[in-house]
Length: 122
Image (cartoon, rainbow, N blue to C red; front, side, top):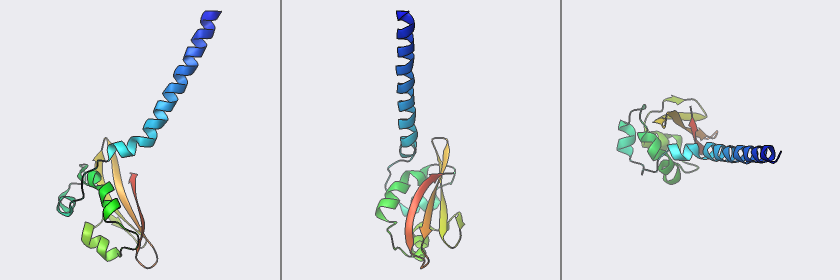
């Protein structure tokens, strides 16, 4: 009887630990996949959409260059032609980073000013 109780307790602890590890990985997977390289406009323009070169620069790009209120035309000059655009959003492919394709979505307000940006998996 004691062996069964210990087996159940061990299994429960193991299950809780696996669950915690899984959710910790799931919450951090995007930050682990995207690198921390400095933004380089020339590399950005020349990057192939299948590689993660743009992805590695995207966090620095967001932090230093994509400031709220930036004009849509200035974003175009900085990043070049987007992969997709409509009135409220432009999208740039960041490439395949750790087996997942990522994109940079840049949202604009009704005045054509940057409202916010987001890195997302495609």
